[in-house]
View 1 (cartoon, rainbow, N blue to C red):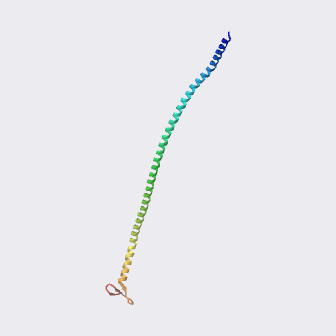
View 2: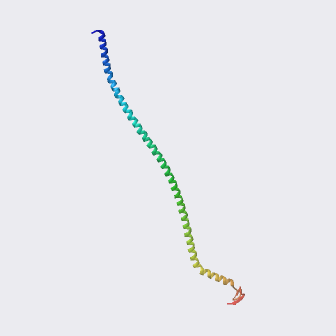
View 3: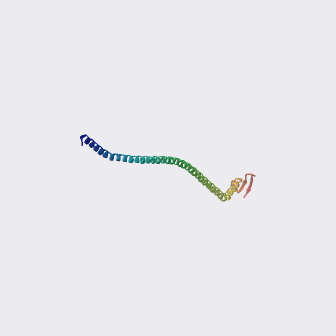
Length: 153
């Protein structure tokens, strides 16, 4: 074999060896490219799911804020109605107490009228009698003021 041929042969051997050595790397790079693509697709899908979940959560937060506002308004309205009811209840209690007091006063007046009427009428008769019939000083007789009569007792 000539030197040139030997060189070519060595070159081709080295080339074959290099191709053989590069070929597995290329295969692994090509395999890694496929794996990278798969990872990128999975990552994009996951990011879409995360974004979708994030939007759902934001919508839920908006709904909860609206519900919270509505509940606060309802609470304020209910508290206002409670205050009004308590005021009405207090007013009605006071009116009831006043009416009970007035009823007791009416009963008391009726009782005192029944008890005091005979006493009062006796007192009135005595005072009218005492005023109309004044004892005449120094004698056993009484004088009527309206008729100027003197009665002897």
